[in-house]
Length: 255
Image (tube, rainbow, N blue to C red; front, side):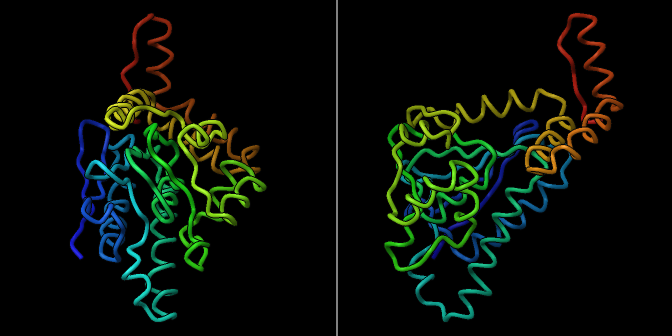
């Protein structure tokens, strides 16, 4: 049952790594707890501007929940100790202050796909498949898929995919706007890093407040003006305006 979740920091970009390649990076309760602790720390780290979620190995991004552990639990433990925990952790990922990028180098099914859906942006291997396949096991998505997939691609298409358990190819995912880039598998991590570094070069408070405004949904009419006013009086805004006038690149410090 070995497996772990770790993170590394390179400048302002943190990479969270699922490290259980022999089991297709399937998630165990211990790995969910590790991921939760990491996310709590990252959310309060002012030095981290972007978070990449990646996985070890050359095959799968994440096969979702470890089926053997999943099936061995009694109903109340399933509800209290597995489904609710996973949903809480994925909500924590989705709610991070920093933008998040899923670097999906291989297949992602079930909870693995839900993990990717909890990220803001997705880079997908051209060879990868992903989908919510739970109905084929006699159950339903339990870590946010029934909410996040419709929000990403529309209710009717999401219902079709969840009802049938049909996986999407990279081309299909790109066509419905589910991913931001499709690249060869060996370019996924580098593409995610390049995108992360580009975002990290922008004013971090502005980026984070923009994320909050976007995620507020219909409340954007309230959130957006507040975010605009609040960011206009930061040191970063002063630096941005000065750099524009002086025709140079700005240097933002997150203040």
